[in-house]
Image (tube, rainbow, N blue to C red; front, side):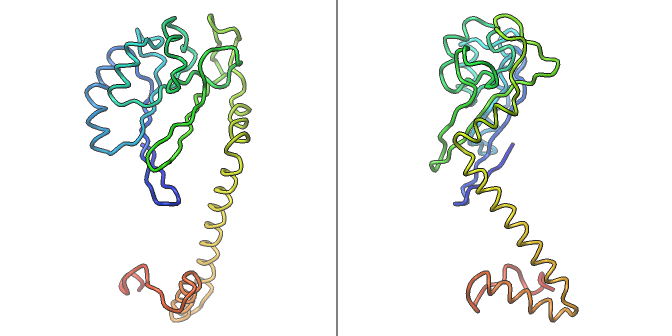
Length: 219
């Protein structure tokens, strides 16, 4: 489970499921997933699904069944087109074949999903290239460089947001570390406490502020 929290403190819980392998994998999803989603309050489920049907490929009936059980996004790999029938569902938007391949293949490799409170989540399927030769019906011997592929996505529509968030995170970390250093340079406990109060006052922009701890914890 991956937890995210945006600037409005809206928590988003995403469940990632590894390779669902054949009928035994489907049965385990049936047993566990619906209850787990409810118990953990999962907002979005992503599952690697290229080996679901007959242990190679994804057929429409299995896709619809797993979707009904709570899976929101289905990622595929080198077995994406192992079943011919996948072409009838590959353009549904929640099925993602590898993104880092040539544009001649049906379907998409990345998509944006809209979740609660107007939150957006981009899911991208990337295929490794080491020891991963592509065979028929692929028309290329291996996937394209996935670093170049993901760079393209970031630069196209999330680059500015990514950089702003990164700068903000780094800035907060630097400020926090500088504050700790400033406190530690004070010789006496009294001076450390006074410096801490000064920092809290500056943070709130007022001489009146509430301590984020009890006096016992402060001590």
